[in-house]
Amino acid sequence: MTLKLIGISGSLRAGSFNTMLVHEAARCFGECDFEMTNIRFPLFDEDLEAKNFPAEVTALAEKISQADAVVIATPEYNKNLSGSLKNALDWLSRTKPQPWARKPVAILSAAAGSTGGVRAQYSLRHCMTTFNPRILQAPEIMIAFAGKAFDETGRLVDEKSVQYLTRQMDALKAEIKRR
Ligand SMILES: Cc1cc2nc3c(=O)[nH]c(=O)nc-3n(C[C@H](O)[C@H](O)[C@H](O)COP(=O)(O)O)c2cc1C
Image (cartoon, rainbow, N blue to C red; front, side, top):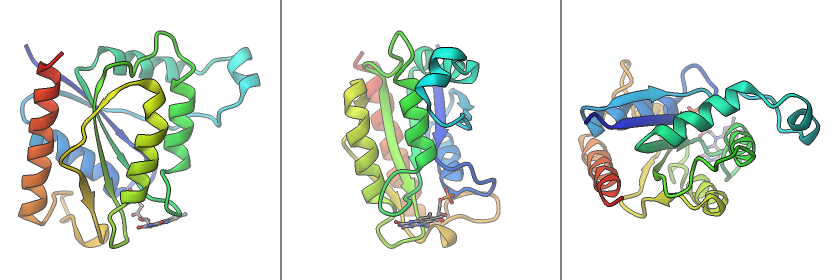
């Protein structure tokens, strides 16, 4: 059966390197039913939650629930995950049933700095622990100096990065099978 893979980019920017990285991850994953999702949600607000829960949050929660695995790439903004991604996680945490429980998840990051967004990855990992997903421990994929890491078609230039990403996607497939 074809595996269902969901992609989430923590950047809303049209030319986002993290969005490119999610697409590269899907390519390295190989044959699957891949869907890139959108986290352009309103700012989380308990009043809005009570009055008019956003349908797009419910729709994403359903997609995550139905997926075999999720790939998330986060930008690093001031040494942390992006506000957009944290906002999406806060909204998703209010959906029932909890879509992340036991879900295989791969975390990635691309950043302009030399550390490739590692601090953002760890803050993302930290705030997701409460949802109890099965986040891969290794290999970790950090794409440093992101402005030079992708070609004009959005492909990773460095063959070693592609190899590591393929290894991570193989680990994700193995995690799906462990269910
Ligand atoms: C508000 C802001 C804060 C940033 N902070 C960091 C940072 O802490 N570390 C880093 O490596 N890059 C930082 N950057 C640069 C981002 O890594 C770069 O803009 C990157 O391309 C954003 O990801 P995207 O291409 O997916 O949008 C920051 C950029 C912005 C706009």
